[in-house]
Image (cartoon, rainbow, N blue to C red; front, side):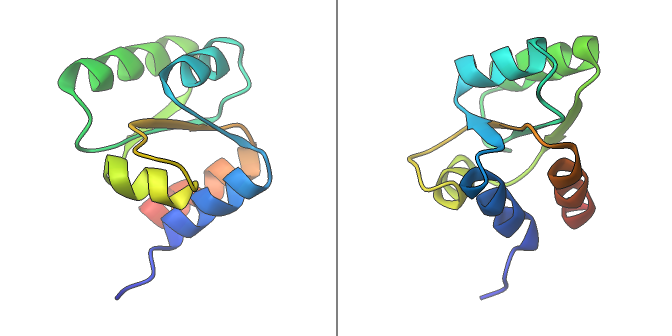
Amino acid sequence: MAVDKALNMISMSMKAGKLVSGEFACEQAIKDGSGFLCIIATDASANTKKSFSNSCEFYNVKYVEYGTKESLGHAIGKEYRASIVVCDENLSLSIQDKIQ
């Protein structure tokens, strides 16, 4: 099994307390300027993807679709998660680097 370094970085962000998950918390982080990277599961609904991509574009937050709801949830030690937002600039850059 290949080690997914991006998911490992997401897990580290959660442990460091620099990550929020769930639709409401993610929207708040994007709107109040504390979020740097919004990650949406590839299997999230089209409505969720559109809502977050529009919001991220408006508030100038980096947006990326990555992983599945199950893999994102597992990485942060919770149930399925369609959306997570990283609230640390350096961690967000590191995760973007691993995703590319």
